[in-house]
Length: 273
Length: 227
Ligand code: SF4
Image (cartoon, rainbow over all chains, first blue to last red; front, side):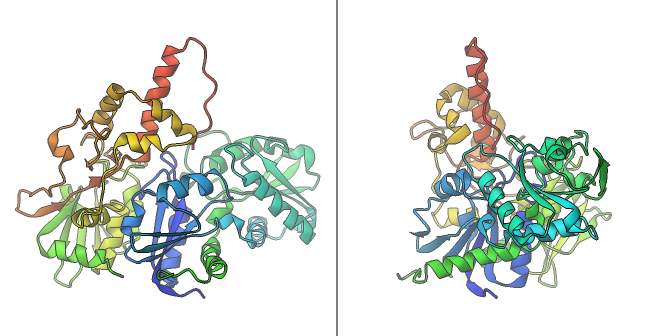
């Protein structure tokens, strides 16, 4: 297990000014990692909540700092916004007597496929996976992020396992569209896992409405029970809807792994280097 | 580890600091600290919390259960008290109630909190917030006068509007970093804003977009999704 009492970890999330659930998984993973003692300090920072990316470095006592983006893919935020706001000059930044280590986003982790399978199995217990269509919902290709690409990569990996009757990547804004789910799936059971970091606007509101399992009520996921009413019987199928993959507690392990990966890739990164 | 915010916090309390924002901090005889809303002093019916992690839930919603994206809005909920057993737990709880505020105060005292003019913050925006570069001086000053007024946010602004233009629409006490002396003689840790927050940047964008919509007779192209 990673043991870095002399180092600090900053987990960076997107956050939201309208949805109170957006930052919750990032805080949850930070609390779990702190309890487990892998790092001497653990902080969160957000683009749209506090502490902000402009504030968080002041909160850190230690000089050796790992920064892990809690994002589902590389993209605009991991490549432009986070480096700019934290004034990073690359994977390694020496500044003010500190070493800032910018790690890969958690969504890049190769165990993501395993987590998606775990979540899918949990949401539809006892349902034979061979009779099941599995849908991984991504955002789409706007905002020059690569979440659509990342979702596709995970779907290919799941398909290679041969566990599910069929597997599709599906999107909110481009084909294959999530609202047309019954036109391209053929199995009697359909499991839907949102490939998102948090139960934000998309997973608690947009996707359930597109699937047809929910009316638009405008309430946050934590204030409703959208994930507890499974299964839904509609369009002649049985549908199981999971909460966003980023709420999976094992995400914390992946965050730590990204820090460990940084060490393997930059083995001579020390303050005196 | 050269810096130690936990120790700094202990030393401030030893020196007579007893509040931050809307929260009163009371040292306990067992070495711990009690936190509560300053307006709940003397109340006996408060819900007791003993974990610093509970501060997260308490900080997220106001009395009417409305989400508070800006933690320094003067809308801290009432009805609770939280016991922090150690200075470390006190620090963790305050990091939820007022994220980074004790840290910024320490940086300020160390002379390591350079303020960033609003124009500089807006100037480095990209994507949907690049529009904020077109903010006019007058509309910007007016917006800051409302969005950053003590009735909306209890931080004190260290930043000027631009290199050579101070903020004009806010009273001097909203721009001073001096710790306030409370009625009982204790001191208050100030909440500092060394750089405009994302909420203000987003509001600047709204002002620009609204003016440009009003000026242009054609319906403008749909703006990208809110990120
Ligand atoms: S810019 Fe600073 S003072 Fe103004 S609302 Fe944001 S945090 Fe408060």
